[in-house]
Length: 208
Image 1 (cartoon, rainbow, N blue to C red):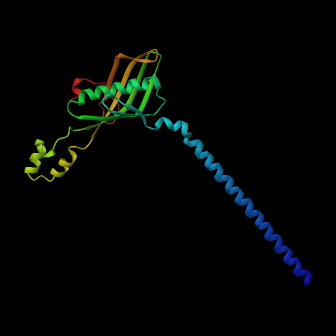
Image 2: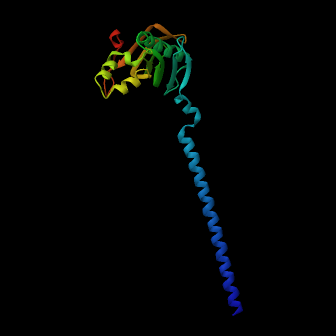
Image 3: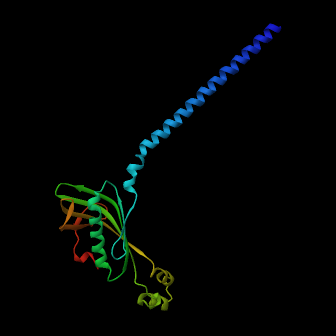
């Protein structure tokens, strides 16, 4: 009886050791799989270096303290970035500054095609403007809303001196020569198709 008891105990101990070994193996395998998944995730993200192109870059202020931010989808050539963004900002600021305080511009979804002689850029432009400060109650349409008891009066009053945004879908083309844009050859187009792409030249009637 004692021999059978010892044999049974030895068998149970062997089974316990075997279960422990199998458990460790399963745990190690799970850890390896988790590490491999983490590495795969890092590879799919493209790494920090590839994401830097999508981080807004502050080009600084223009002479009129207008902030310009630039977010490219591809590796936009640095030697053309400042010329391109400043040219667009100066054009819009010149056209709109008689009517608003122009606060800044944001260039997003910027994509380019460059050859030895030309560059083409498609991009979205956001312009931030603000009315020249004024007591809203002296503005004719707000004054009328107040006098008529309009439910929109308070909203019109509150929004009058707040920044506003305008958005544009544009294409820019220019010749290039020795690392600089040919300023005389610059042309600007606007996409007039609501759901597709149909660029037409920007004329004077495009601006106020």
